[in-house]
Length: 126
Image (cartoon, rainbow, N blue to C red):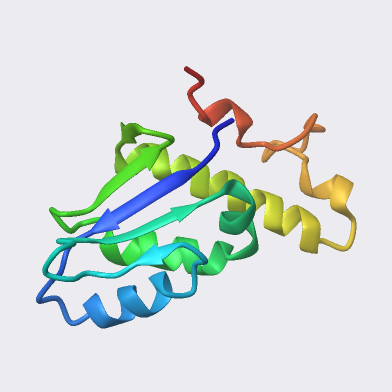
């Protein structure tokens, strides 16, 4: 799929800014805002996104409307709709791992048996 995901967001006057930075600090490769670095940045892997799926979802929810927010897969910029697709896949993986009967989790919404992650079709391949 890809080697890494990068999420960047600038300093905000939003009351949620401190919360967003607090969540971002939980990721292994976080670089915070400084005068020499005009944005907060997380570089992460699909594995870390999966392991921290609740944090990933909450962070995207908070920062998605900020003008300074940018998302990248590898070095390619992507928009909020594409990042949400990745977050859906990560959430699905985590739910699969946490479910009592994992095989039933992969059933499609209409009740037909799925062949794997129900969200794989949503990811655009390059």
